[in-house]
Image (cartoon, rainbow, N blue to C red; front, side, top):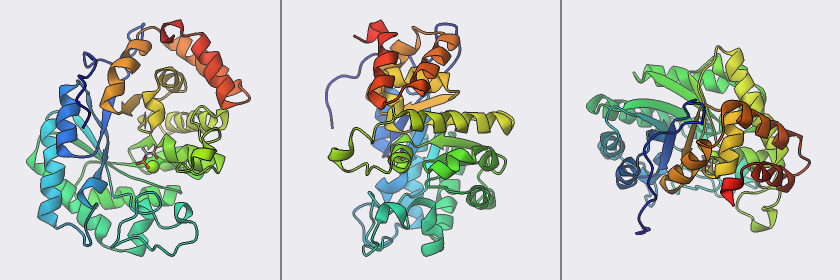
Length: 316
Ligand code: PEP
Ligand code: MG
């Protein structure tokens, strides 16, 4: 663990004109959640539940899962905690779920797709989340990774409701889901953009390959256009919530662009909360929209980044 003190953050994400942008934390364990709460996060925008499954050769029991999720809910009593159901496969293989002979694991069984390949794991996880939620005061939202169609979003939302959980959503990580975000949001309660995977799949550039770094950049205008399509889809579905929980939200200049594109909440590593909040406070909503338009019209990621950063002098 990093022992350097965290920079001060007063727990408020807000633009210069008072427009609120709740800043949430990405967490991967109960102790991580405690540290994020202490750092002032307004909630959890991404609980990566893989922590409970890693390093095991069998599925954790119901009680083990209830205890693991409960430790996170306890750290955020009265606050929102967005739980992502298991994202096994591709860059997160699990011995008892992942077929290691797949020729293209990033395009294979991962995330929500595991439910068809290994029936029962997801519904048992939802039952554990529901029990832990019932034992704590956090406001628990549940979302599935790697949703590719509105039908999948609808099927997942039905499973969430069946488990007795109040709020079900979809991650937008696949371009098809961004294009049809309106249809997805007519079948579930919220979406959260996973910009790490959305960038990888939009640019056809492996997130794990350093040599692909220039393409695999969330500043790529094509990625920003899909984020815009997602927030427009949310508006068409009656203004349902759109968050970002990929690494893009931790880049202060890109955070401004994301808000300008219509994103409502940003979730990030706790260390980024204070630097992101500091830059958001320097712009109002019209300025954020203007910077988003500049980035959308750029012809490369580096050009988009350069144009926006030039308008945010406090970053230098
Ligand atoms: C993402 O893809 O942006 C994301 C938040 O999920 P992960 O990085 O865990 O795949
Ligand atoms: Mg992802």
